[in-house]
Length: 282
Image 1 (tube, one colour):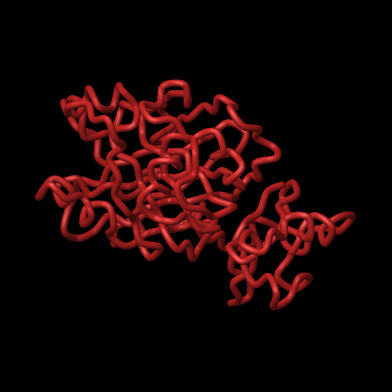
Image 2 (tube, rainbow, N blue to C red):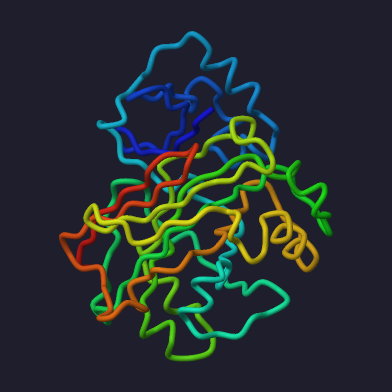
């Protein structure tokens, strides 16, 4: 099942993606399930399936503005240096624990919406990643149990304003400029991507492949990330784990490759789809 958040006729909606259309769930499920986050929290996937069964699409994908898959997550955890080739290209030391930083919901845009290069920098970089969406919350979740806490997957572009990121030892500023993180186009529920599935991640800039890896090459696996994060903070339904980018980022190329207005960046995750965002100036 694919679930997408979108704007239509000035209203925030969500629904089931079927082909090139969307079956609106907002009107069918009413106030009890006003958005995807609430649907997840109330274990409403079966309700959503029944509501959409046999229905025709209410709107075309081309006729709506897609929002970040989860527009209102309580927490967005981003994992740094989680592929060995990226760690090596940054010349950073290995660490026993994952490097964790956070994003704010306001820094995200949906599929097809422009990622904005801020006025304060031209060093806007791409980072293709796999987003893991928490379905069942919990504290001190074991690696063995972690798969039961995942409700779906999406694509993510952790757009980075590098000079602001590198200005201090803390990365928060460079990772949270408005409209720099792409999230979408939708969530594919975990029943369609079973536990232990090896996912392929590809990033393209203007059609040219820049990054290519699989989850086999993660330094810290998805179960380890869930176990680590839930040790120090309770995870909640709708929380998002942006699981790390592989080698090939623009900043580490010779010469560096920065995203600029007119560019189009794509992040593809096997079993999920392709997130595409044009680049514009803020």
